[in-house]
Image 1 (cartoon, rainbow, N blue to C red):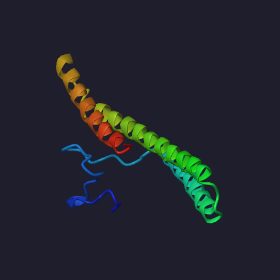
Image 2 (cartoon, rainbow, N blue to C red; image 1 turned 90 degrees about the vertical axis):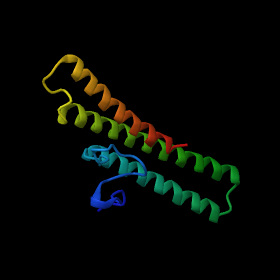
Image 3 (cartoon, rainbow, N blue to C red; image 1 turned 45 degrees about the horizontal axis):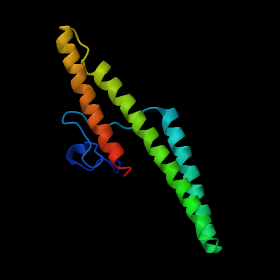
Length: 131
């Protein structure tokens, strides 16, 4: 069970992020996971550099500049993860859940709108973590 799987029954959540009937997505795309891990490793290297700068009594302005850069790198990584989540959720809910199943066009449109609204609520909650 991952750190996100903290609810009874192993239902994945990140804070209050989840839909009533669906667990929170995990990163399924290997290419995206590799990209995110590489970004985090670069940020880790930047953080080590900042620690070294502090140990070497470098000027505060230089340290602050590097801190801002690592923060931007982490924010960018977070946004990339959120976009991946949005793509996965929309694909799963629109194609895999039967939202586009046989039926009237109005019912199908309503189902799609409902699924999109759920995904956007989760995305909004994810993006609010950046503040």
